[in-house]
Image (cartoon, rainbow, N blue to C red; front, side, top):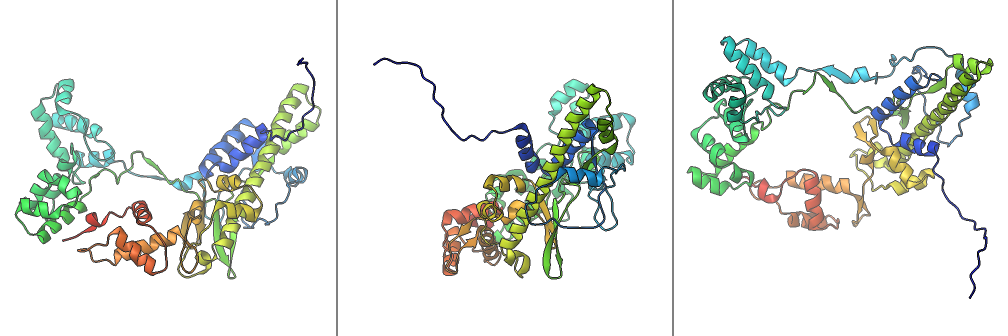
Length: 457
C-alpha cells in the first residue's frame, strides 16, 4: 500500500492558559499577607496604579456575578490624587503596623538579670558568651569540651559560670538536655523531693509511656504517690525559652479577609479592604497618555496602564469570589451561625462550587489561607468544610463526631479510661456508625492520647 502525505483540518477544544489568567488564579490563591506584599511591589513598579483610601462606610458586595466596567471604574476615580489612609474610626485598623508589637527577647530578659548580679568582669564576659549560645527553647546545645578548646576557658570555669546562668529566671534555662532542664525546675520547686529527683534522672522513659506501676516499684512508693510525682514533672516547661520572642518584632500573621456580623437578625459579610483594596489609575499619568507625549513614554505608560487594568479587574473578581464563597458557607452552615450549639453540617467544596456556579478548584483557591472573623471567633475558611459520617438521623460532620469523642473522654473515669473500641460502642448506641480506626485517627488529630496514656492511678 502506497503512503502519501495529506493535509487534514481537525477541530479540537483547548484551554489556553494566558499570562493574565494564570496570574488571576495566583491572586485568588494568595492569603492576605502575600497579597499585601504583591500589591506593594506592583505599586512601586507601576506608577499608573494607585490605591484608594479605605472608606468609612461599610458596604457589602452584591451576590450577582457582575462584570466590572473598567472604563466607568476609572472615570469614577480618575481625579483622585490622595494618599491611602489605612485607619478609620468605624473599622478596626488592619494595617501591618497594627499587627506588630515590641517584645523582649530571651537574651534581653536574661541580660537584664545578669547585669543585676555582682560578679567579676571576667565571669560576666564568660556569662555573656553562654547567653549567646542559648537557643529559642532555652537550651545550650554546645559541647562544653569543644567550647573550652575554642575559647581557652577551662571546663571548670565554664561550669561555674553556667551555674550562674541556670540560677536566672525562668527556671530550667541554660540546661544542656531535657533531664537537666526538668531537674533545675524540680530543685527550684516547693514540691521538690528525693523521689522527684530520682524520677527525673532515671525514669523519664517510663514516665513518657505512663508506666506508673513500674516507676512506683522502682521508687518504693504507692501508685498514688507516683501519679502525684508524674503530675509535678508534667507541670514543668520542657522548653523554658519558648515563651519569649526570637526577634524584637513579633508579628500576628492572621488578618481576616472578611468579617461576618449580625444585623437585624441576619448575617452580613464585610470584606476587609486591606486584604482586597480598591485600586485606580493615577490621573496624572492618564492625562499624560492623552497629551501626545513622546512615543517611548506613551508606550511605557500604555503597558503599565494595561497591567493596572488587569490588576484592578483581578482584585475585584477576587473580592467577588471570596464574598460568594462565604455567603454560600453561611447558607449551608445555618446551624452553626443561627443555632445554639455551633454544630457544623457536612459540607464539601463541590457543594459550594455548584451553589455559586464555579469550579471546585476555584473554591479551593478562594479559601486557601483565608480567615473570617465571626461573632464567635476567627476561623480559617477550611474549618467550615467537613466530611460526613452516617448516622440514624442523617449524615453528621466529622467535627461533630470529634466533639462527641472529646466529651465522652472528658466524662470517663480517669482510673479506667475508655478504649477506642468502647467509644465506638457508645457512638453506635447514639446511632453514629464509625470504626475504631476512625476514632483513633480523630483522637490523634485532637492530640488526645490513647487510653493507656490517659490512665491515672
